[in-house]
Every structure is written in structure tokens, then in C-alpha cells.
Image (cartoon, rainbow, N blue to C red; front, side):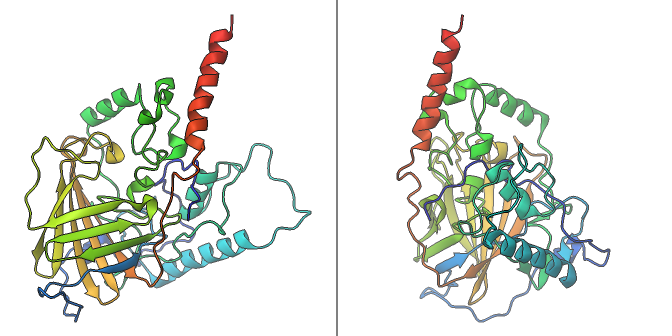
Length: 374
């Protein structure tokens, strides 16, 4: 799909859940013990699990846990069903034919607080006046299930399901950067920035330039985007693993058994090497560049990913993020990648992308208008 989402503000914004949650849910401690898996999984010629395939990572479960849940990682089946039913009803209403005599939207748009996580994202993506309807989008329709548990967030550590606080020096560093530029990982609606952020295409955010998918879909860590282009393809050989993302066709090449490149060599998606720990592929990524800055991280970002085939249709993707220059402690999340027979089409993000040229042209017009004033 070549449609681009414009105006995604606060991409991982948290919202209130649409159901009343009860104390019957389990806490994050329920998943603290190591998982013992005795399953028959497809294997490659070298005996390791065969991770190759195409996977759909769409989900309605947010990265961070919604407010009010505390340490409750696991939802009851009733809570999860209520969330899924609400989204199904909302989606059905969204794609239903419109009445020609329906009331006009408010003059200043709809500024009410949406009751669900996905609804919050869609409102942010289209602004108060609205955006694409569900004909153009492909959001997740299910709460993620891991070890038979319905989860309230991707993050499992810390136990509150929140990204740890940013260190004071990191906040100061990011504030200084944003005083003259726009964050490289900003989504389009958060990409206004200061006037100098429109000086040329090189200072625009990566998603706007169609270089990397918004919301860290390329990874690492590789996260859901909650809108569309949810597919990932893995191609595996004896010494290499390739991970192709449908969003902006980002491709990661992981060397199995290799050594990291010298620290002087920096890459937008980092330098990834891998090793096998039993039946789990562990990917270690360092050597990031300041051109990406995942959620305000520094070049010291270090990401560990673990790919475990839990059955012939599912991979469990687990990631740990650490950056001693940015966060007070490491943080970990996990979610399933589900096998699909869907076809991963090319995403020609920049084809006919007049918006970037128009953004810069508009900035020049504003400058000229301001200069012409007495």
C-alpha cells in the first residue's frame, strides 16, 4: 500500500482502556519464570529452527501499558474480549456507508478524549478533523497472546509496563538538539520543530523522507505501527538472516556468528550479529548512529532481540533495550509474530511524494512573506 499516514502525533500515546479492569488479572510476575517449550518446529539443514517465512505483527496491544493497570500485565479473557469487541464495533461503524444528511463535524474538529488506544492513534493521525477511514488502514484486531495469556502491553519489564524515566543528562541533550532541529524518529505531525528544521530535506525526519518506517517498524527493536503494512519476511541461511519490513521496505542483514564492526562504523539500523542459544536466535545490535535516535536514544543504544519459534505458525519476538546514556535502566518487551500467507508487496513510499517538496517550498514562502513585512 502506497498511502502514507500524515500527522501521527505521539505515536505511542497511551489511552484509557474501554472496559473496566478487575483485580482478577495476573501481574507481570506470572511471566517471570523461564518458558519450557517442547514443540516440534521446522528445522533448517543445520538443525537450528527454521525461522523463514512471512509474518503478520498487527496487534491492538500498546507498547506501554495504559494508565490504571499498574503491574497487571495479563488481562482476563473477558477484559480482552471487551477490548476486541469495542474495536470491532468501532471499525464496522467507520466503514459503514455515510448518510448524505449526516450532521457536519464540529467547526474546530473533534477534540474529545477517545476511549481506546487505537482510536487515540487514529485521531492523532488525522488530527481533529479526521484522517483515513478503515478502508485504507489495517490495524490489529486482537490483543496479543503469549503463553496463553492476554497481555495489556508489549513491555514486560519493568513490571509497570512503562519505559523507564530518561536520565537528566539525556533530557538536556535532547532539548539542546530539538532547539535547532527536529527529532529524526519524529512522526509527521510531530515534525514541525523550529524554523531551522525546514532548511533542507536532510533535516526532516526519516519517516517523512521515506527512509525508515515510523514508530521503529524497521527496528531494532522492531515494533508494530498499528496502522498498516504489518508484514515482515525472514530469509535464513546458515550464516545470515535477512529481515524485510513491509513498511518502507527496510531490510536488515544479520550476520550469524560474526563480530561487530569497529565502533567507527555507524549504521542507521545498527550493526547486527547473531548467535544461537539452544533453539533461540539471539541478535545483538550496536553501532547506531545519531541519525536515528530511537525515542531520544544516543549512539550508545544497545538492543538484544530473541527470536524463538514456539510452533510452526508463530515466532515469539522478545527485545531488550538499553542505553546508559539515556534511560535509568534497560527495558524489555515481547509479542508474537504470526505466520501468514499474505503477499508482501513493494511499498513505494517516495513514489509521487510531492509533500516533501511542498513542505520545503511552504517554508520558503513563509520566510519571504516575513522578510517582506515592514
